[in-house]
Image (cartoon, rainbow, N blue to C red; front, side, top):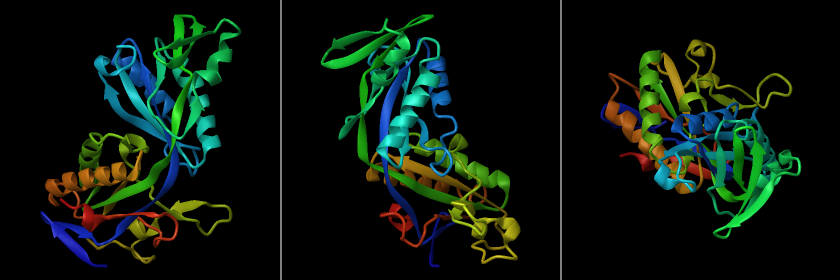
Length: 302
């Protein structure tokens, strides 16, 4: 594999392979940012990978009161799935169990797409006949009575079929502390890119995977080529000085959002340098056979 170097960091001449997904976005507000974030964090729990979670979700960004529909602090949340039916199922369940239940919460649409997905339309029946339909400013809302007042929820939000999932960066470092420092620096940079999320814990995944495995029924299994403890018994992608690898996976509202997020992450880790962070940066792909979106690292370098 050919390699490039930037600020002493080796960049593999490879690409991240991503695929099309369905996605939506909502705004959750509350009396304080603490409670808006609590609802958003709870809603996006257990949503790291469609392999086992049904969807991938995370907070896109925090919003000040001046940028939300009801003038209260909030969070923009994005949810991704492989199909429309699964996306609707995940949205309904997570909204009902995690946002409706959260003190002082309200929910609004934040994506105009090709088709509607139910928000309040799916939850209104919880009002047991006491729910109120309200139209204001050309939008449709439901007011559902709850014990601290009312849950205000827009009726629908939009669905986009232009979303992309699976952009990724791999940070290869001399030890765990340096790998984590590189990953954290990349996460901080990517968090500033609108329309892109990192669904794994804190944006970082240590258990990178390959397709399939030797056991029947396994959809994915450990990425042994990047596992340091297996270096002597598999066709390893690691050189002797690498002892830890961490990955960031990126989903975006558009192809451009994923590219911008990867560019930001690359820049941050290159600037950090090899002494404090990653010795080498790579990306995961399947030989170009699974996803139509290919993000070549050399094209994204600063």
